[in-house]
Length: 303
Image (tube, rainbow, N blue to C red; front, side):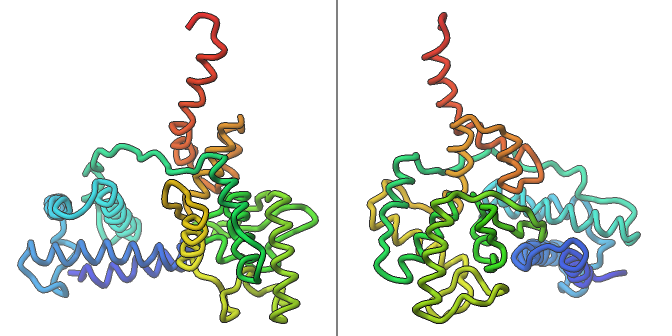
């Protein structure tokens, strides 16, 4: 009988080495699966090391899902169930199990949340509020311009190196989820802000010559983290008095929403965002429904 906890480690290693999943994604899977094994040990009245894979069935999974309802949202429960389902699917492919006991367990019914985004005037106010009084200010302005201009995830932004920017072609190379690469356009204002920052960095700090080095640096001249970018965005959002808190992903939501509002094709936006499924991009069409209704009311001769 195979201990489940060792199979979880085997699965996580495969996600990293074979699927190319990021360290953050692997940690999330590991957390959700270790939580499942711990709860199963309690249900089965066994030590966690003694929980064998053969003891886990659909009933055990349903008991775990029922337990999760005490302290988790439906969205979180759906994500955790997805991790469990993927784990058992992997074991079936490896010949360790004959069937996936989680396959027929439905996801909790959830309503898709409407993405939080900034109206265009507030977005421009935020971008224009960042001063150019210091090297860190130039960096901050470049970061905000890049987040909005290219619609990249904050993890993609912080992972970028100097050689990922092509100023001549006005494109950047981005490594997204699953270590998938894409090339996406970026606007002139963002490139100009980035160029100003990099030139100032070279003059003041003597840094920036390394083509393989990080694009954005912190005060210790090392790679900026996603958490630091969130703090930078929060600082400037508060300074310019925005009516709502702004998180890095709201910049990405704003990018997609503003493109669709201006008539961009949904599949083009899908490519720009790096979404594998069109359904992931379609959540932004709910945001633009007000725009559609406004256009309809103005244009249709017989409302």
